Image 1 (cartoon, rainbow, N blue to C red):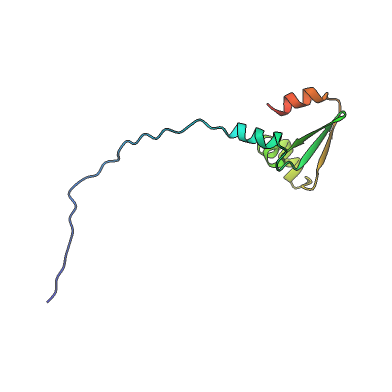
Image 2: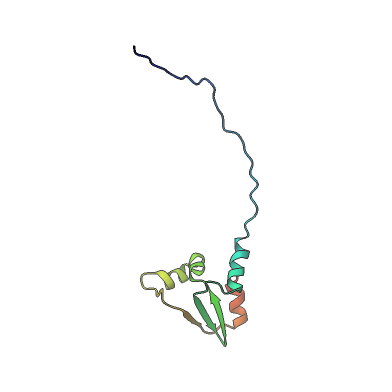
Length: 98
């Protein structure tokens, strides 16, 4: 005896419109908290008589210059201090948070 079973599906299913509420991103606030608490800071900028802590990966993600300086073929991933000349600390901090 030989038996063949087949299933025929006649019902067409259409995609359902599902609405999901996604809260606004608070990633900037989270990164700012890490910076303020100095968690994971791996580079310092010496600006005048002040030291400004930072995260290399975030700087590299936001700037091709920092990406090249820290991780490029002629960059220095072991660089832990960058000396900034001819900029006042207050001006540097304002520019750095943009």
